Length: 162
Image (tube, rainbow, N blue to C red; front, side):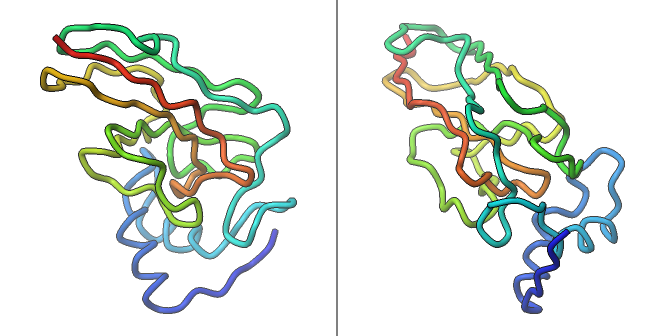
């Protein structure tokens, strides 16, 4: 394992972002985990992803016209799907990016209305979206919500909600 020193501010940010994410994780475990990264060819602080890993939408399809709530299903291939907080090699969990671009790949995925976390390890949801055109994109991230190196993300799709 590679140990990385963090500044007090970065450690505090990691504590706030990660605390309580995993179903069985304590805040102490989350803080300790924030200082450790996986081995491999990943950039400092990022877990490696295996060659050929991919994430994709099962439904809806790009260009679909749908009604709200929108059923969204997705999958990962080439990696394991685990809840946030579980530090296992070649694994992570989904994030759904709505009506915006991908976030900074060197930081944890934001948690807001445009970045939906699936830290429980799920791969489907129902979204309530207003009528109009919307973009959706998937981003797979590690146990600390940090995208892998290289990052694993889908093509952005566009849907229209009636």
